[in-house]
Length: 332
Image (cartoon, rainbow, N blue to C red; front, top):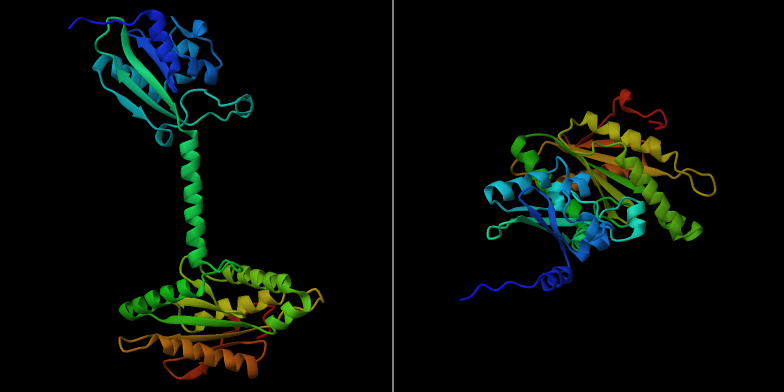
């Protein structure tokens, strides 16, 4: 079969028709071909790039992974694929004048390919614009995160929703049995939340919930404790690996912080806080802890208004919160 060589003009037309950047280098790193795609995104004309060293035309490429890739291709015949995730945007290429003004380079996938059957050419650099792909991937990650949040978080408070909290509760309860550690459950009730929403509007009721959730998150250990919305006007806080007396501290802090959450009338909201603590055995039932927290909340609501009530489920009796655990606004 006879060798077939494309005429120079035809070859250049083919190179210019490719919808990616093509740079053909000789063995010394001089540019032999610079296609129209590169002219568009670099702003450098082919006549100003060809027959010059790549490092002269694009000084930004000096001492980068692209330089090493070109050396490997020319000297050792090894190809390289440089992704934007690992190597960033290596070349100063911009999709628009506005992007150039704000230094927003297009996202580039760069393939450095050795050329073995040409006496002059040594390697080909192909640059593909993957900006749209990365943007789609980012949107998909955001949508996935939003779906995950919607599946696990309460939309009003940002706390765990009931389903997610139940799963965490079951897991932590089993862990408490295995590690023979105490576990606590705090139940918080917002007094007259339904009436607040009726009197001042649902938006005000949601604001109260959001501010209380923020106060709760600021009063517990973020890496260990979990807060979740249990019902319309109730929030649960799981307190693993704490002594019974130490469980009073976050409750008192939350009770104090709630006094700073005021209604449009100027009155602070009123919350009630009951805590149950137990050291579960293999025979223990998680519902015992929930029932004990309800007992503590009932006592806090009807017999000890404005105080944190802690119930020891193992002893079947109430315990006093130590005085040094109280927030100065708590009123215990």
